[in-house]
Image (cartoon, rainbow, N blue to C red; front, top):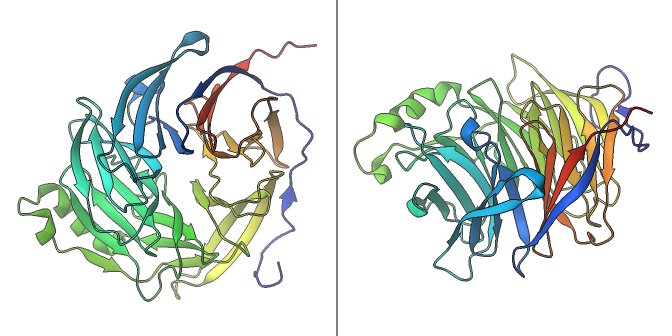
Amino acid sequence: MAKIAALGCEPVVGSLAPSRKREYRVTNRLQEGKRPLYAVVFNFIDSQYFNVFATVGGNRVTVYQCLEGGVIAVLQSYIDEDKDESFYTVSWACNTDGAPFVVSGGVNGIIRVIDAGNEKIHKSFVGHGDSINEIRTQPLKPCLIVSASKDESVRLWNVQTGICILIFAGAGGHRNEVLSVDFHPSDMYSIASCGMDNTVKIWSMKEFWTYVEKSFTWTDLPSKFPTKYVQFPVFIASVHSNYVDCNRWLGDFMLSKSVDNEIVLWEPRMKEQSPGEGTVDILQKYPVPECDIWFIKFSCDFHYQSVAIGNREGKIYVWELNSSPPVLTARLSHTQSKSPIRQTAMSFDGSTILSCCEDGTIWRWDAVEVSAS
């Protein structure tokens, strides 16, 4: 803690005593295949499809629907032509007329934009020099996605036109693999990224926004677009002393985790006159036992009321985000769930939690009414 110029008080650490505010039970378990599943995500882009989710594992992208009574229906499946592809991440996006896309990336460094309407590839983006660890979609403009790569860069793409608009890398960029990236929920210009250099970096697109707008009307070849480098972040935070493998904005605050059994909530305090500098105020810590291996990602419900995270023993911890000190809503465990959970997905209202595991299984947990006793 000494090296961080923390303002205010000591961070508030949550208690691992479950509040029993909400209880969940297993309603389904699917064995998708033998290969590990690295990502699962609900579609929050289109209200018609809030109960639809996608998973990735090996060279397969699968789309499912959560139905009543714990039923999970397979809607479609895309298998990459390269059997050695291993997808690590998946996100939902759409084109300008609202047609849904499933966007995935992995070890080959190629982003596949799949048209969920016809199960065909809409576009493939080549540009990253190494594997892709995470793809996220801009919630206010879901034609825009960002990708975080092992090549130490983050790229901004337009899925409609296939253009790489911006590359966040260079003099002030990450010095090792970028593991996670996220768009700010309301500030169109801000993204945050984190990675194996132990830092979280906040970037601004404000002075490059004309290029973002130009990407929608570009009629020439995508390769001729004047892609710009953003070399300097507006803020660099050293909150963790090891790999940072997941970061998400919580309003103007940041949730991030490393390999030390906790999620940290902190506030970046930027110095207006000197970009890149500032202080970090660590506000709260959400303990997650046995969460000490990298590439475990947490998820939130649509309104960021709760966060769910799995651990290497197949357990899930659900924390309330709008309480201080933090309240553990539920701890989910099942005798047959022993494999590391790589990612969780919370449904729109948080009533369903999905987990995807190293052993190729998908687990569905549904909230049950807690009787007032």
